[in-house]
Image 1 (cartoon, one colour):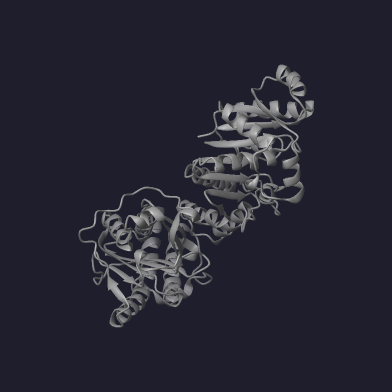
Image 2 (cartoon, helix red, strand yellow):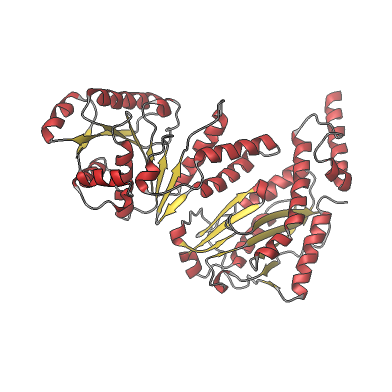
Length: 242
Length: 248
């Protein structure tokens, strides 16, 4: 099984079900100017809309695949956009999926993560807790007044990802409809995080015992992890021989 | 602009910090970050703001992140930004962080450096920052205060308090470099009491703050200094900030 095959299938199937039910729609970036970049600190006083506050549901998922199936440039929204809600705080999930050729999975993870987390837009503050997969955002009153849309965020993320050499296609899905919808992706998100954690351990730890490793169950399921492990072992043996 | 309020214990640093924060906040000086770096934690009461989470809580969570493993510096830095946002108590355009009281022992130098850098990064996004420092020279010595632009020294009229203020200034100069510093003499009864200090000290005296019944009443009742009305102490502290060129 490829690295995120199970999680990708789960999330894509859920997205298709939402599309079939008329809950998901594509946001168009046509005719919009790229939203200006810039670091932002949006205090509560200046906030028009909060997305993914720690007190409500919040999720951030990054997945990549060498298979086809990613619809390049697609921005999907399940729920209201910034201008379409009268709430001041709503649940939020951001799912980023890319496809391409990833020779060094560890470097690719870091490249993709940095491209996503370093995207800073004027009047839009984002804070992320990678281990909890939480994403907490605020849209300032000024940005909301100027028409900020999740299409702007999606387009900026896709543009940043497409600048990476290894990325061929990128798409983003946002969920703002309900805490239940956000939480329905949690099992897949947690599964993806365990794959990433296992990957990190392989690249960062020199000596570990597969028999006692806490990620043994992940490697037993995800064949690509085993292949990576074998490849890394061969590289280590090769460098040791020299 | 990052301002650290320093001095001997018991000279009124917390009150000066709270009134200075109110002065900057009330005068529309943009976003103001207030950091209570004193583990005794009196600034929270003085501002009437209760932190949901302290910087010490943040430190503990980051230590847990490090223990779990698999997190690089970037992950930790991103996480810290998130945790600091959780720890930030907001009131209008003012943000408040409290250091809290460490309950554990051990060396956390790496974590403290990460934490200091993160606070510095957060402070950059505010227009001004006021840090109510721990009494004495420890935080200066440990370079916790290295990003500070100006040291607002506080002393009462005692020789001991003045000595401590001068020592802090000297240590800061050696440890951090050439940032500005000025002295506020707190709880003086009259100008005549201040004049000898002005003549004796090597420090620039920014002004003196009189004993003030309004401040005493707010202190006694635990009322928020963010609501402090015009009064002699408030006027004196605002005047000192102006003399130091600290108001934006």
